[in-house]
Image (cartoon, rainbow over all chains, first blue to last red; front, side):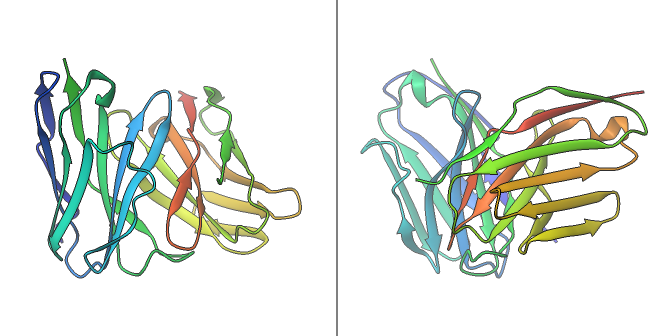
Length: 116
Length: 109
């Protein structure tokens, strides 16, 4: 079984450019999560979708960040314009249920973003 | 705002010893917790979750939850060098996880 798929695995861009990160969740999973990981702040939830609908976007840092889930098998996280402080590893995770107390999240390999 | 606190480490143990990893949490109403392992440069992978007070065992791993003290721990018996990684504790809310920053474990041969 394929796990969560993310692309690209590495992205280097210049400040001000648009960056789009992509995620394909595990087939049959109903919830999708976007996280950002840095040494300083650890692993932070950015946004959570259930059945393709954004449920909680309180972790999205600012208007420069946006996320979409047009169908059950694809999601994007876009940063426009990008800034050096956006440099981090971005993980996508999916889970079978609605994110309840025992609903296991499975993580993709991550995208390492560097903004110069 | 939920908070999960972990000692960043590193925690160094010799091969074959018991490694004890701990976290504390802020939300007294929290019901369940996950432990994930993350190797350097890799993504978090699930070790186990615990839902009720007491102990839960899975192979060499034992998770312990003490709701009165708001304390969660993970014991790794017979530690192996391959267990060297960062261990993340997460508070499972109604629909999302709040992670601690993780404890780095180093197991020396």
